[in-house]
Length: 109
Image (cartoon, rainbow, N blue to C red; front, side, top):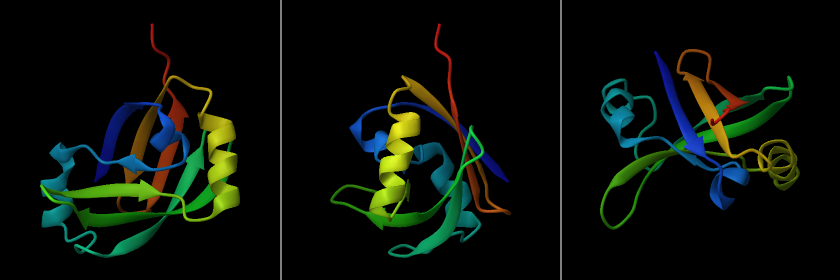
């Protein structure tokens, strides 16, 4: 299964934290991809060929549960921000089998 979506780049995304749209929660829940309160290792693949270790976690707040990708290492966050922060929007392709999160620039007309 591949999850595909686009996001506008703001402060949170520029730091490598990308929340998965709610429409994919049911599929991730049904596949038991990541238990609530836990995380799994993933790899961010950038358009320039760089690879950054990351994680996908399943969490909860006062109103709902959610899935979010994030980069744990401070140096890697800075590198991601340098590569992605200047873009207005990004496209995300996440392959659940390979744990690869492909991030590319999205051209907005």
